[in-house]
Image (tube, rainbow, N blue to C red):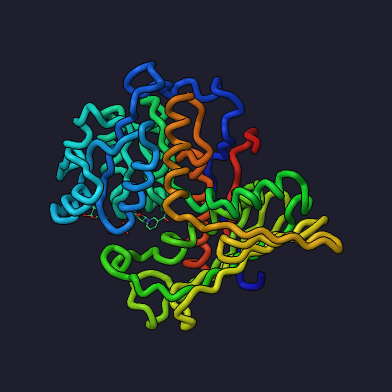
Length: 370
Ligand SMILES: NC(=O)c1ccc[n+]([C@@H]2O[C@H](COP(=O)([O-])OP(=O)(O)OC[C@H]3O[C@@H](n4cnc5c(N)ncnc54)[C@H](O)[C@@H]3O)[C@@H](O)[C@H]2O)c1
């Protein structure tokens, strides 16, 4: 990679998922009662555009869980959502939500710049959290939330819901069962026209990679089942889309086991539609995904194809269900905030690489293993 220096190392704690409950002893194992039959009270913080998927995903988990309260600084949106989903308790400040004794778990659906400010009072009030992606806007803030949750024995998970589409669960299963061998090469190409740049999306200086690319960066970790060690990224900001942040990006990720991955991700493609293609190559075969709905396995002479529904709301429900499992069992969730530190480190490395036009390394902490 001509033009990239390699003298910078970005470090992050290399946190494997715990092997047993004993490795995360401080996680609270109960909600409000030891009675597992008790309905878990859900609070939703932020009643904007994407929140309706969280409301309906939580509703679908009844009687295990019930949305008992919602909060938004915007009274119109708050009432609209609460009327739509029949939620009685409506509050306008996070501190009020934190005081709601009937709320056990809060789903944080605010814009990314409002994370630590809302997570802190909620965690201190004993709530467990499902936080929307991107987890935070900085590594320091991400660490602060992870450390606070660990100290208070609360669970925090991140809604990396792109892990839970049926096509992805199937693909991961094929990779885990060795159908293509250990992946050595991956390509994700996602170029779209996103004329949705309004509100905080118009203001943020971190757009394509942080808001949508984070799903693809996390996907690379999730399907390659390895950790990134270096990133080379370039970004562009084209006037076709009125944004303060990047809307065209190209990234190369190097993994610890030598695998290479490329992500091309744009928000300003003049196709005005969606162009999504994903490929994972291993020594025994290749997997090709289209639109997270169709999976094709190529192996020798063999070619097998599967089609799946891409259920967006159900993927939100899976994130919440897995968090509830974690709260009840005391085991760390697979999409825990601690796990997400690695996805965040990858994102940070991309922005640093793009800003300084060089290759950035990501170093694991010595002695810890995947
Ligand atoms: N997982 C996914 O597939 C997916 C898809 C879209 C958006 N998101 C994420 O969801 C989050 C929200 O996105 P959105 O499109 O719904 O944004 P939005 O702007 O439509 O809604 C955010 C809401 O939060 C409220 N809010 C802001 N600060 C608050 C505070 N301190 N207290 C109470 N309410 C507050 C706002 O009034 C607004 O109603 C973002 O992090 C975004 O990246 C995730």
